[in-house]
Structures are given as structure tokens and as C-alpha cells.
Length: 124
Image 1 (cartoon, rainbow, N blue to C red):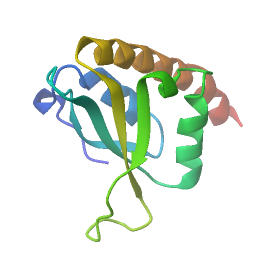
Image 2 (cartoon, rainbow, N blue to C red):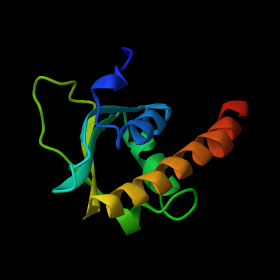
Image 3 (cartoon, rainbow, N blue to C red):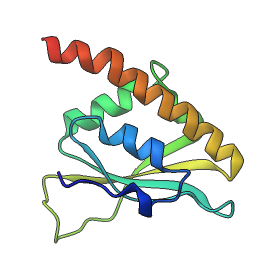
């Protein structure tokens, strides 16, 4: 995976993208904070269904609750990409400051997930 230049990102998305990119098998590929006028969005890929399952499971109230602030959707296919990789979109229900508050909660939850659960998995 190539190094990501976060200097080019909207400042509101940086910490969540960094957190998501720490999860093995997930890579953010595009994002937009919505600039107070539109929904907050992060586009990302998952290597396999197991990775997606872990991400969705961890977000179901255990480490963060993505259902209250976000929806995860499958994006359009891209025949120029590896067909074994799923492209998804994480999109906020809220706009502006309300969305950013949910982003902060989700970022904190993902970081806790990585510290607790991912470390346990590595020990197996």
C-alpha cells in the first residue's frame, strides 16, 4: 500500500481516514467532508468479505455505532480495479457540525477497536 498524503484531504476527514486505514484489509481511496452543504463521505475498499464483516460487526454498538450516524453502501463497479476488491462508501446522515461530531465518535471507536480487538487477533 502506498503512503497516503493527508495534506490533500479536507481536515475533517483526516483522523477517520487514518483510523480506517489502520484496519488490515481496508484502504480509504477518496473522501469529502461535505463543506457544511452536503453529506460527509469516505470511499474505501475492503479486500474481502471477512474484512467487511469485521468492520460492520465492530460498528454495531461494540466499539462505535455507525448505524446512528452513517450508512455503508456499495459503490459503482470499476472494471479497471481488481474485481476481488469491494468499493464502498461511508456516508453521514447529517451535514456539517452534526456530521463532524459523529465522525469524532466513530474515529475514537475505531481506534479503540484497533487497540483492543485487533491486538487480540494478532496474538492468536
